[in-house]
Length: 109
Image 1 (cartoon, rainbow, N blue to C red):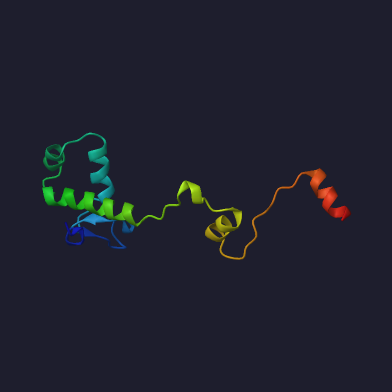
Image 2: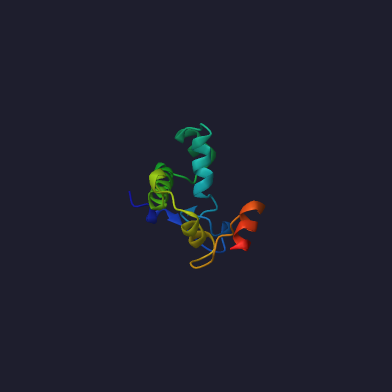
């Protein structure tokens, strides 16, 4: 399903959150209703402006967003230098916590 026909993002509406067909119903709200156990029929009864296609578009949007998330495999977890590049930018050192004993030994060298 091409959710782009159903899901819109407008900076001035609902804080720029993805909404269904320009309405003030967000994708998050529809997903939250589904996650709380509401059936499609119950959601459609509560929101007569929504259609079954709108609900499927919300699911497709969420699936596409999940697919685009970057994941790091557990075996390839980045070291402190990589994390510093992710969090603060490249070339910014990660503060190291050194014991007093190690600090004194380093100063003697």
